[in-house]
Image (tube, rainbow, N blue to C red; front, side, top):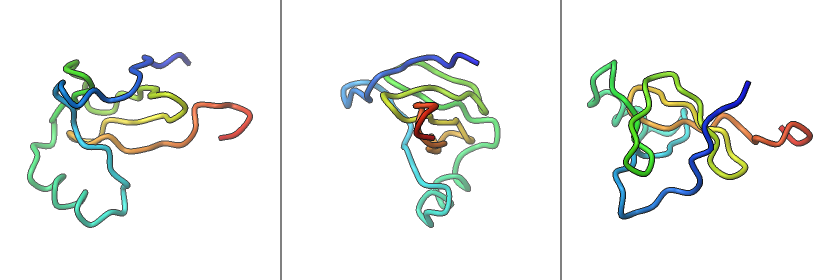
Length: 77
């Protein structure tokens, strides 16, 4: 399956945070956001559950927060 290639986050654009799922701060952010929140990457909105490729990293939108899903390199997952 092909995922959108979004590049690196541009700090001048609207971006949702990239977090680690077990991170306590991420849990607090998640509780503050509505359950159907979208994620933003360089000003573009992505719906909840969307997976994108940022460089060599796969990211999944989880209620307004980008969660790392591992490497995009099939030889080094």
